[in-house]
Length: 224
Ligand code: ADP
Image (cartoon, rainbow, N blue to C red; front, top):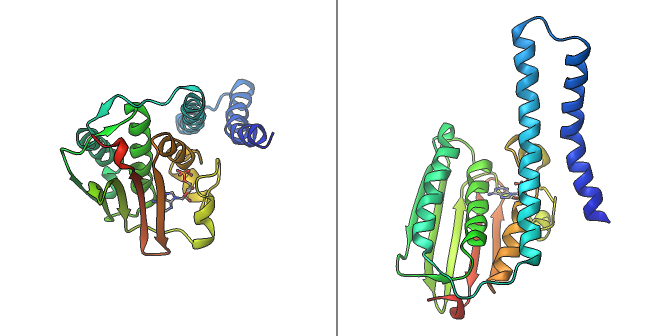
């Protein structure tokens, strides 16, 4: 019940903006081109927001119903190379430095789409929340028996009281920053789900004004 009411709430505000503009335009179309363009641009942003929300909801629901993949061998290093390039495009106006260190031989047994979504969410969060000229370090390596994926940023950090709640659906430590950067509030819920389905665990360490590190540990039986 809570989930349905949260989704409805998330959908309502972009819909209010869209219907507001549509009513205004159908009653009285703006004469000057700039107001018209501004309206269209706002409607586009809100429609995109709903689209992201639906995409994330579908990703969550797929993971709730699909069987867990054990056999597929995922080349994580190659996947991360693509995600790093995507992140550079996403954050090109922020002039951030993104580095990637990967153990190319370290492969993970699992579902490539879920792992893609897991790694992409953490990397994209680092890009979205970190300020201009910030640094983001992505690593994929072995530590003891486990395989570890980590993303470290020197962004705003997260206050300690929020950390235990971050993976709850629609929980946001900073609502304005989340909305401004196009967040749905579902990214870390997807991350947690995907990690659990790969028998792994998520560790978050963060301090305000210093930055955050999100690490995913996968057990030996998932490594190949
Ligand atoms: P959102 O779509 O709002 O980013 P997420 O589930 O991905 O939702 O993240 C939940 C919240 O955790 C965010 O709203 C933000 O407050 C915080 N957060 C996530 N990643 C970072 C980060 N790298 N730096 C600072 N805050 C972060």
